[in-house]
Amino acid sequence: MSVREVVAIGDPVLRERARELDPDEIASPEIQTLINDLIETKRATNGAGIAANQVGEPVRVAVVEVEEGNPRYPYKPPEPLTVMINPVLEPLGEETIEINEGCLSVPDLRGNLPRHLEVRVRFLDREGTEHEEVKRGLTAGTFQHEVDHLDGTLFVDRADPRSFATWEQFDRHQRDEFVARVSRLGKEPGS
Image (cartoon, rainbow, N blue to C red; front, side, top):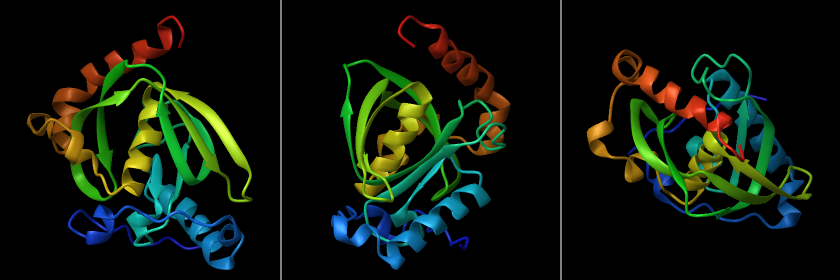
């Protein structure tokens, strides 16, 4: 496994729709190495997830994992490692929440954007096994963020530009309100 360089906004690979993998490709050494490298890169950068095109590989592979005590996202609920190949999202209901997001490919910038409160995600894992899971709240937002990457969309495309802030300014002026608002998600009926 190796940590790969994360490409930054402006690189054309971030604006392409990544191609789906054939089931036969999943077991290939190239794809398995890519998956290992995505996991290692996500962990080394303290990300909540990373998509293959963020390391210059335009294929529909992404990983999501939020470990307890993640210094970049201490307010996100833990989420076990999920390797998604050819993911498809389906919003469950019309309800959205405003989430403040950052991105490894958009260094030192955050912004507010609406995300579906609850989504169903269908995907293949690294063994090619089909999965269907429902995600809610900040976790649903993380999955939407990564699938957006695979579609060539960055959070800045969906965010209110008036909400943009550096990490330092987010910490100083916006974090407390955001954390208080999203922490109520787990206390609502149906959470």
